[in-house]
Structure formats: structure tokens, C-alpha cells
Length: 153
Image (tube, rainbow, N blue to C red; front, top):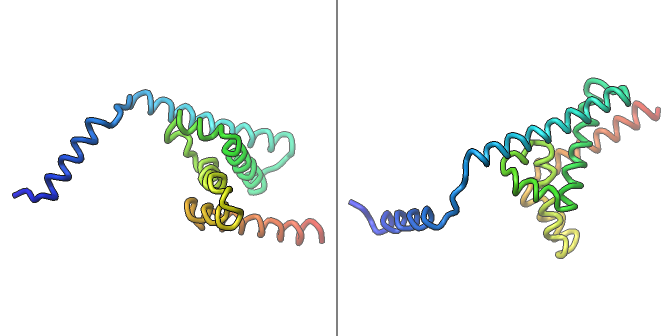
């Protein structure tokens, strides 16, 4: 026996299915695949350039490539380009490093009018998650300590 709640849920779902825009799955999958692949290819290109030109290898190379991709994702988000890429490619733009950078920078930019502490910093922690922000901050701190200990002394 159906309850009133079940009828309301069915009515709501039928209304949503009638009014929701239809998507072309093949086109969406193709766009996500090639844009995600292009982002990964850019990362591989940066890796090749850093290894050949700067002579980096191993963990140092991985760190420099990660920092470059985080910078590119943040910079493109700041310019509004990454949002257009995400609108076009859908899930293809959520490649881990650049997608995380976008998820940190987007809310910070959106709420900057509320001030640095209550707007930028608070929304950055709320939306992107403290794990990402603390992870990046801790890695920068550890990197600076490593640099001072092993490069300066």
C-alpha cells in the first residue's frame, strides 16, 4: 500500500524527469575523455620539460610537476577559464590535482567580498575541505623546512 509520502515522491520524480534537460551521453563522455586526457598530457609535458631542461628526477620531479599543475589550475580558475572548461568537459575537468586546486580557489574567489577571514578563508575551508588545505599548507611548510635544513646549511 502506497503512503502519501510515496505518491509525493513519485510525482516529484516524474516532474523532474519531464523538466530536466536531456543529455547526450556519448557527447558528454567524449568531451570528458578528451579534456581529461589533454589535462594529463599537459602534466606529462611539464614533467618531460622539467626532467630534460631542469634535470630533475624522482620525488623532486614529482613535487615540481604537482606544484606547477596546482598553480595552473588555480591560475586558470582565477581567470575564469577553468569554469568554462568544467562546463564544457564535465567530469573530465576533475583530474585530481587541477580539480582540487579549482575546488579550493573557486569558493575563495566567490566569497572574497565578505572579507579575507570570513569570506575567503572560511569558505575555502568549508567547501574544499580542511584536508586539502591543510595538506597543501603542511607540504609547503615541510618543503621549506627541508630546503632550509639541506640546502642552506
